[in-house]
Image (tube, rainbow, N blue to C red; front, side, top):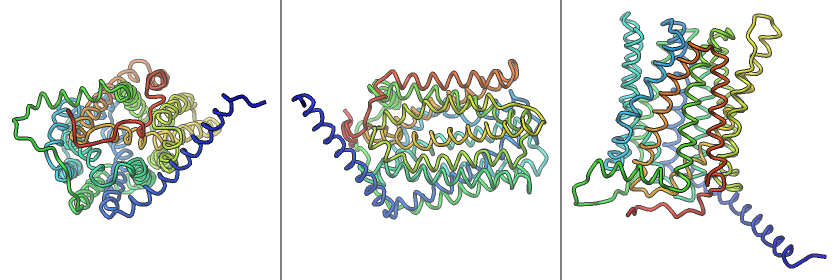
Length: 451
């Protein structure tokens, strides 16, 4: 016999299911509407082109460092850290000024600066002066422009699409990046074999010029807070830090993400040496590995909006973070050896790892970015994004150095096991905090007010 309580529970279950179904339909409608937005279509194209070039360099740069410049694991760590160090030095300042300046203009100049930084690498190579320290200097310059570029990129989207379309728009952008990450590594591996790593990086420089042109062509109106009072950079930085780390969900989410970046940078640093030397991957096979990850990321991004609407951003983020330790455990377990059977197992394990790794990233990123954009007032978006980027990339720099040092002192495989442990810590932080049950549609709406 049905009791009153069970009847009520059934009613709430049906109501919840109806709400979820409506959320799925709204997500689909918002995604279609945002893509018909001309400004968003151009923004989408800019992200796709930039992602293609970045994915190409993700393959060409490690090959340049390991095979052309002959770097050891620790030197690979130094090169990887160089891309992140500017975030630690100027990340907080960048957030303040991105909130003060027109974000569209910042993004254009940042893209042109990154294009110049990368273009100088093949120039120095042709001149015969591309030493490791020269490459590090170019990557420091590249990172400095990237600090402003990424803070502006993540803060510009709410000016292009409505709030209700943010998750769908972020998922679309992740699909664009996934497409770039799919084509970029395969072409990158082929280009490296055909024209060499330095010239392959030059192609990435060209994509940043195209990116800048597309962003400059956007016709949007940016709303900014007007104030006649003299503003303090220190106070504005403090506001961004406070909102990020004192928010009941953003705080633990930020710490989980910081730990994730440490583990990810350490893992990718070790992976370059492990795959190219221990497993004897060719340039093409190494590039193909990232292509497979890109395909998986595209699939994940395809489901990101639907999963986020159905289960909530927090639950979706937490579940995907449980997948990273599994992925890197597969990498750590890949056997080394010249026997055909061992090599086949190693290739299968590494590629399976990148399927899991890419899918998790595709699902997670759109939901994390949407939550941050939804709960942060517009006047603080640049600072909050700058704060997150600064801390994330600082942890990335430390992770790259730690991964390179550990691989040199302890060996590659023990370091990979350590990477698995740190990824597990990032998951546990999210799982045992308010992140796990957070929904961005239950939070106060984004506005231009902050007080």
